[in-house]
Image: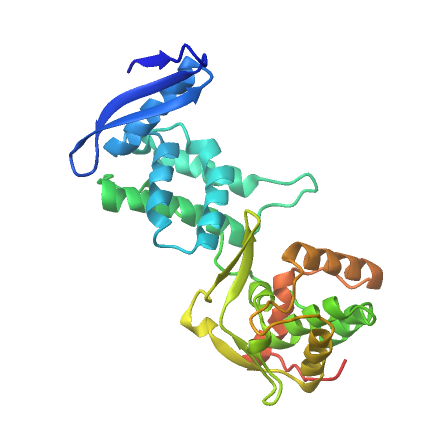
Length: 322
């Protein structure tokens, strides 16, 4: 695999032929490498992906996997899965050929994940361990199904982690009242936390709300979309499932909060997002509120659990004015 040096720029480049997925001969040229070695490695990496030979490294194969999945999964899902692969899987398997990954290697990797402890002595959560292991299973299943890998070593290795936490943390109504009292003079965080607690909305659903979603006459809030930010871009998607589209009855004191807050926003249009802050800012408000009130810190997502439990009749949550 010869590579060449551009005498004008002093940079290296590779130029070679390959067959595309239809069997046609194609020429590929890639320029701008500082080192000869880098140009050779890029060419080899490209040809591995084109051949789809399972002697390719696991790192190369994951690129093929995500290129395919990007057309089938939500962008937010791809971002989450890529982070798991880059942080927890590639450091162990990135340089190993896919066909050489063994059951003992999977078991050793699992054991390292389960024995991990942070600087303050905390292990990975059971749900996180499950998510990491499931992503490895998914990639190897993909190799079995579409690239004729003989078997998935993850199946023989067994699983780690759990889909659901054994205990679900949430604030009682008294705890929430103590917390929200800290924001009595700050309308935006008051609206944010009250909505999450009394409607069961997820943070992305809350941040996607527009004036069109609030029906003041009927006292309802429509969930039809979710919001997140990636690469400095605002992205609005539909909910992950059909059940995610729903209409939620909201108490009078919450409709009043919405009305009060929206009246203060100059030039708010019906399709504008009501809450312009981001998840990072809301997490910071929650941290400060807990520190100042002495209320135990829970996950932002866990604010919705009292509402969800009340819907399943495991916990009664009365609508009470704040």
